[in-house]
Image (cartoon, rainbow, N blue to C red):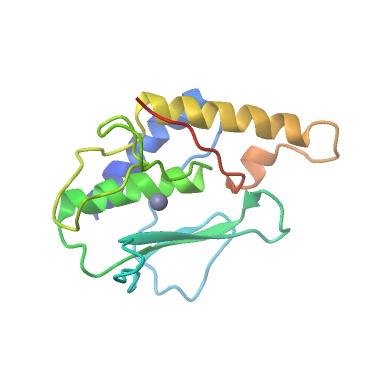
Length: 171
Ligand SMILES: [Zn+2]
């Protein structure tokens, strides 16, 4: 639980300055039967395969099939047992939910969106880096632009996140 909260809190600190106005609050455990708009639920499920060596995955659902996400699932493979690695993963998947893509060629330590070496080895990243914050800022500015001129009120505060993915290299 604290492993999840750490990453969430760090993203919340960044949210204020990113202009995204997306805030996460920790609600505790759920049986998953009731999912409300705005929920981001973490579940344990097999994600890892030899072919696709991902330890986790974000499933984003958009009720209006637009670029905004209404609710999402973070699937974390059971092989992730290390607390610090779980924090790295949550920081990474929240990054996806904010519109960031994986960056495999980013320099290590510069982004939450890099690839983890293994389920045992933490990358030391517990939230968005300054590069990640700048990327989110740019993404949401673009989003505002995208929705301006339409009859769409306060997309960021009404709807949780954004699906329009952006990639930026962090060096
Ligand atoms: Zn990823």
